Image (cartoon, rainbow, N blue to C red; front, side):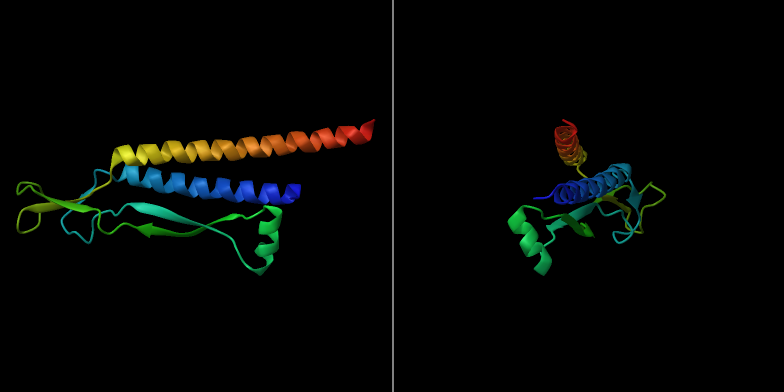
Length: 141
């Protein structure tokens, strides 16, 4: 595998983890949001990752270089709960409010996982840089 392949793979993984962190922060920021209609409530976001396999990537896979792609960011529609609060100004005519069912503990665990993955890719890039510098020093002798 060439150094460029390592840079491409680690860079794409870092970009994917950045998008993952963005969706987590959005979910945490809107965890307590409410609405008067189940269709208007905030729906948690989750990124969908995939490996980039195509005709050219088949040869890259043999070399060990397969970049990460964020295929989509989806909304989790089934994550809505209702609660009876007739005195709430946002309550519907039946007295219900609707809130997003964001699990803060799960989001925090995902955030820690994403951060660790990002840090691991930074370490890979640091090691590759060190390897390249060592190769350059060989030519100086």
